[in-house]
Length: 260
Ligand SMILES: NC(=O)c1ccc[n+]([C@@H]2O[C@H](COP(=O)([O-])OP(=O)(O)OC[C@H]3O[C@@H](n4cnc5c(N)ncnc54)[C@H](O)[C@@H]3O)[C@@H](O)[C@H]2O)c1
Image (cartoon, rainbow, N blue to C red; front, side, top):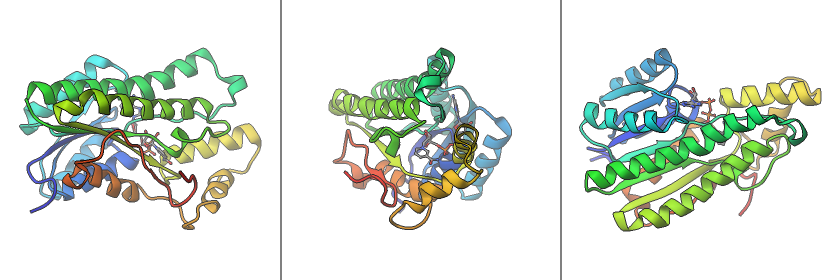
């Protein structure tokens, strides 16, 4: 018996990086997986990997900043996989920009994806759990940047603080429905997101490509960058029964960068 046998999970931003690792880990724990992202070919590849683990999978192309699209994704998940138990609001974007230079368009874009995308994911998942008269788990991507503001990442940090706020509020509002809401706060994970963050730091500060990533990784107490699988292991705990008595929390799992 695996911890997620018989469960259905929807993972947003699961075409690559942390979301892909979460999809595969939850599948290994027994869950069937719906993959939401914006690139059909990449989603299909992850869906095939889930199936090769012996689980069912489906894909849904959507932009999480669109409220109706998120509701449609959850309906699709229920119809395609015959249930809905776990919502992982993982998709998000980074933005490296000194506060002095942030434009209205840039601010609007990241607030829409990182805050509204998670808001709609929480709201739509809780509504579906309620309609199905069942318990559920909602899990959101925060960050160490949701606990401390980082230079050049001010607006990104603000969106991740907001994810923690939504997590705390939703946990209290939905507790009586048997729904738990928690977040995960990774540190420096070697994904395409960091390739882009590093490239932007190089552009803005004149650092060499690779230098900013190395500087941050060198500061990690455990001496290595975090892998997507490190993150997925904690998300599996949040998705499973061992976290049933936990709600409203956004623990930092970062190898030792930010201490709370
Ligand atoms: N990489 C890190 O170091 C790190 C650290 C802490 C937190 N996080 C958070 O973890 C999450 C995943 O990060 P990652 O490193 O895997 O990033 P990534 O850029 O490698 O992957 C993100 C995925 O989300 C998808 N996505 C982006 N915007 C979307 C939208 N509007 N609608 C649907 N899908 C969308 C992308 O297509 C992509 O497949 C993000 O929320 C990120 O902020 C990452």
